[in-house]
Length: 337
Image 1 (cartoon, rainbow, N blue to C red):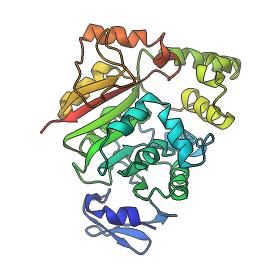
Image 2 (image 1 turned 90 degrees about the vertical axis):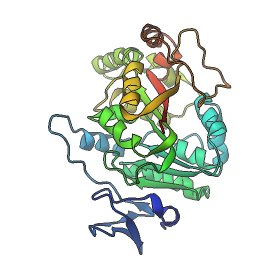
Image 3 (image 1 turned 180 degrees about the vertical axis):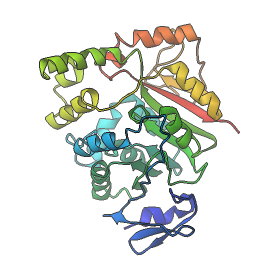
Image 4 (image 1 turned 180 degrees about the horizontal axis):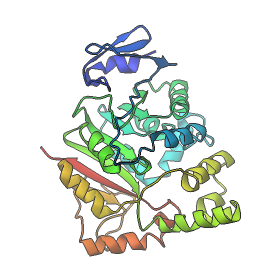
């Protein structure tokens, strides 16, 4: 039941002491500190609580409880691999990722939720590792993986502040929509950035402090009106999305117990402090540059000027990324040698 972990045991480490692990029967044990970790239906339970800095807000338990009750996103609209490929193929970013990430490499998705992206990327003969702290989400992800025989994909319960992988284990680490639900987004970024190989890439997606304004206004209206007027959210008006997925979107966007907001300039500073060079972004970070359907995600692009980036982010309030996508933006960086 732990075949995926066993095949890649060389990159795993004890989240408690940082030493090597070994597999014993249906569990895992650290060869140094002796700590034993169980598995739940083949999902290794490697979550280790963080010794949190008291100067920072620890929101782990409250966010974990929220997502255990409301796993996000959901598999309602597709139950097999063909449906997943069809759905993901309609999302330009996901399609470009799948087309441009090489085969036969290790890819880590931190905060994978119900594992749709991990499973999608695993179709094309990649070794994909999906981690999350919420077991309900991981069970949904692994059930889909098992049903569709995606044997190169594995799911693991992990605290991103206490990684279960050795430093510089992955040529690509993806972390979309996760860090802004922690009490220390930059600390979380530093933690997962260590897992990227030199010359490798990190993809981080966050709520934008400007593009998120539209969502904040809708949240206020929903709270005042008792969750009426849901038609104000473009996604909730769509006919091609089922009721369950609409509900999970509504809860994630408007009822989440904790979120922070960030800017392109802030993430550029994160990159610089952790030894990464800016590669590209969604939306593009230079005024007049347009993100196209054949965009080369891993080709270096210009980061633009501070004023230009400000204009782009303010513009997102009124465009699709601000109104329909929850004010979400993505930055891609490459680790320096």
